Length: 154
Length: 159
Image 1 (cartoon, each protein chain N blue to C red):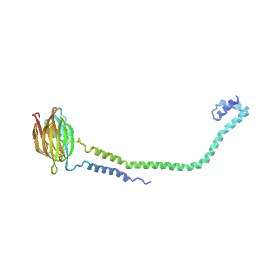
Image 2: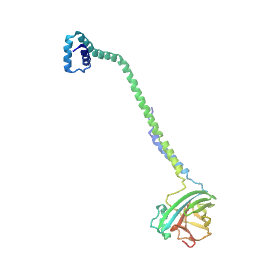
Image 3: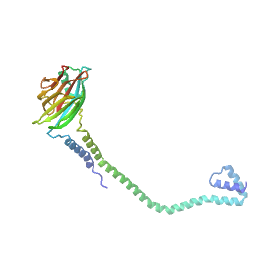
Image 4: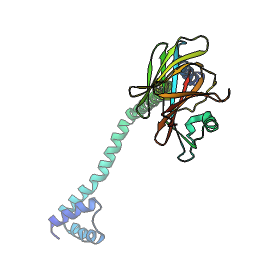
């Protein structure tokens, strides 16, 4: 019986790894006309001094912009939306946010944002961001502090 | 000692189970009883005869046994080779289920709706085209290019 080719045995895992990489590269590649909208709901208060590590590089920026001592991420959701497709994000305190990508050019993303509290319209705005950009929407009272929404789009 | 008892002791002696004192007692009986002596001689000769017969039979079977051993060895070797081949096949293709499992995990978990990786924005360049609220005052806060722009909602002068 012929002995197994050791090069063939070593090549199989490498081939599988390459196939996996190709698969991974193919799966998340979103079309240019879709926008990935990421919304993080942060509870800012003066209860304690902890800052959620999930806030990443904007922890320091929050400290330098606001006078709160504690920042805790309550929820975070991400949706891939096509231009014209409205995505609804549930927010703490029975609030909802509706985001709709609008037609844009180049690496720009335009988002129509509507934040409601029940039937009341809390905010309606249209934002223009670069892909990977971020904007903060804050102010709605929550418990003994406020809610700050971190909205980013890619 | 009567002849019945002597016969039991003769058999025990042939089996090697008779104590030394009993052997002496039996020898005394055999010296005076020709019938028991003949019985003892016959039974004592049975063992060597059987051993001789077994030896003869073994010699008769030896060529057949010698011919059988190569076949047994060949069978054992073939069985080992089959086992080696199946192990090699299992090792060669073991990566397939692993790759399938990894691909399935990637498909299941990559496009997740919830993203827990920390925020790493690449830009704070934001244009606010319009802003409106039915129930609150809205302020636009801009503290420089290296800080995010903030839309601040002031509800009933609460915040």
